[in-house]
Image (cartoon, rainbow, N blue to C red):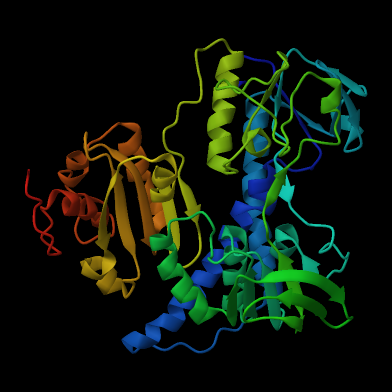
Amino acid sequence: MAADLGLEVAIVESDPRLGGTCLLRGCIPSKALLHVAKIISEAEDMAEWGVEFAKPKISIDKVRARKENVIDTLTGGLAQLAKRRGVRRIHARGLFVDSTTLQLEGGDPATYDNERLTFDHCILATGSVPTMPGFLDIKSPRVMDSTGALKLEDIPGTLLVVGGGYIGLEMGTVYAELGTKVSVVELTEGLLPGADRDLVKPLEKRVRQRFAGVHLGTKVTGLKDAGDHVAVSMEGPEMSGEHKFDRVLVAIGRRPVSKGFGLENTKVKVNERGFVEVDKQQRTADPHILAIGDVAGDPMLAHKASYEGKIAAEVLAGEPAQFDAHAIPAVVFTDPEIAWAGLTVEEAKRDGRIIEVAQYPWQASGRAIANGRTDGLTKWIIDPETERVLGCGIVGAGAGELIAEAVLAIEMGCQVRDVAETIHPHPTLSETVAFAAEAYLGTATEIYKPRKKKE
């Protein structure tokens, strides 16, 4: 974007490939593997229709190679895009000497003329890395973070996932469908802490069916590499004492990368959580440095980072851009998927906002019934005074593909009637977005919910 706007641009990247966390070791490889898991699961579900397949034969080497091919295809495309735009690629590690100078180290010296690079402005996009508490970091090849889990070195007989958030559940889903007996432990009393409980219920039900165990309110107190397994010490109502697992995946969150490359030599301010402080134009406290993506604050989502990147480029080009999004969609790519955008019920309760909730169960959706996936729900969060849609949550197969319409409606300031009176194609799951709006208005015909009487 910066190059398109006429700026002279160089990218300093320590990895030989472009793409960052999402493409190289995050959302793209995980979704490639989740696609494999989905096909295996759907083939098994077809038995209910009288169509039975033989148990799949899995070549883990071919699965891994295909996943790497997806990554290589996309990184190769990025390299070509950078080249066509005249963006200079510098393969090196950059350390700030001051606000306008980087010391370049390692990588490929052929990509840079000298060891110091000067610039007028820098956009900081250093991302995040998996969190690994010291007492769990036992330096064992059997204990993985999300990056290690994506390498798919083997299909373990048993796997313990520490953390019931989206990363743990997504990777747990992959391994479970490949044949591993997966157990998940979560310190809180529910999976996906912070997510809408109505949306989590269908997911938790299916996870309990597909996983070997789901243990809530449970704490891992220690790990020990016992050679052919990991001995895990736990405290919880269902799982206490020491238990054996072939592998352990620690998925308790991510932390921003804001240390170790000289930010202290600039005027950039870093808060207590490690995030670089930015304003609505992505500017830091240093006039020469902007920041985007995971290092610039929650939510740690690639599409949020891209949005911020465009803002930063436009700001440096002198355009009046700023971050003004009302809804940033979030998707958990489990089975079923969970997606939400805008205001949530929990946020409304916390802030004391008066809202109304309208929801439509997928048990009444013709397409969901035809697909054999009625374990879904679509709900709108509505301002009862203005009838504007403030938020939306969806759980169900393909929820991530449906949430974009809700994001547009929220950004456009639509009233619930605008959604209800937009003709949706039948029979599709997208209809549930309109049907949930009709449920609020009392005009839904697929479910019995009489029109509310006006006072």
